[in-house]
Image 1 (spheres, rainbow, N blue to C red):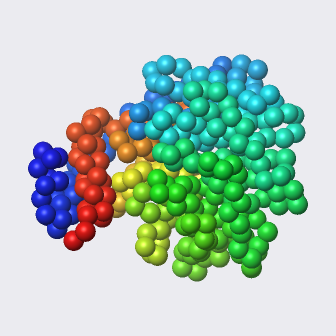
Image 2 (image 1 turned 120 degrees about the horizontal axis):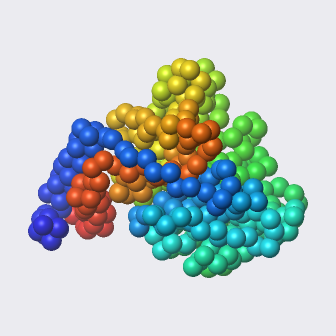
Length: 362
């Protein structure tokens, strides 16, 4: 079927790709239910899952039996594996790519931590820009890494780690910047201090920085992730002073709203444009959500009061944390019901067709 679709003229491929995506979205909304799995800890009372690959590998943090925070890797149904540190006491993992490479930070001693890349579960020190601390926030399929690092002057700047070591991505008119996300084409998003002193969402393309803007009436924003279609998720304040999750695309910003409370925050974005995060209810509690392109859906909890979603892969699997019925906070995996293998293949096929059509001359 895929071969016959690809052989069609470009205009038909585009139409078919759009129809496939619409069919997937309609089916997902018709039966948007998730099972929730407790991923456990490293023996302590707390864990958080930050990201999930398309192979189902999960990166995050978990407390050990000694109540120390360590980077963790889950390969369900196996329990969490401790990724260790760079010789210091603590570490955290924030992102994972489809090769299984994990990034975050690890302490090198009691006071300093460095951006870290775990390959085959072995930590590699990515270094800094001359200062004592750095942190890696995201990694793409080429294993290029972004985050931030302190300079020898005491400021911290958005940083790119590729084949040539750490590269300073620069700032706007302010003192600092942070890179939070990178897509397959090395387009990078994050935040920088503006001349006014406020944070503003930015994008780096070929090391050139551009401002993405704010919600109407807002004063600040930050870009948290970018997908291969260059959709970007934002944190931004509203005219009322609340913080809302938002989706930026081609210069337009969509407010994703809340569950009736004041605030929401977006953390994860897949290549189908689905967003995850957490949103506040009118009662002051917050729960994880998935935004399917039209509306926000509540993901539920492990029996406790709150949950939060941080990562989503292209198969619709979501990871984050939830309070348990006993009051602890554990990393969780939300899996679509029924497992939408065929639906996800259709959606991924549509994404492939879209990319191929973009690369084919008319």
